Image (cartoon, rainbow, N blue to C red):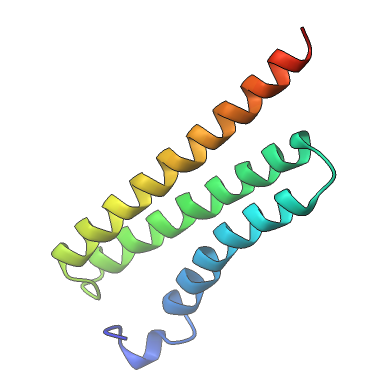
Length: 100
């Protein structure tokens, strides 16, 4: 809401799409037929998370996002990344354990 009106359909819209894509990819992967597909969609979610992180950095560098907000959002990006990585590791371990 703090971004310039001119960015409503630009960077702001891209950020919203990337954020929605993270959750959507997790949900789509969960709805698929197996762990292998879930792992693929978790990778897509990580890609969307990286995209959102880049957009946050760009927004701050362009002066549309205060440094404090950038730090707070980057902290959340890092935490979500950790959670996605932990979920991927646990799923991969399940695959390894079931193949033995």
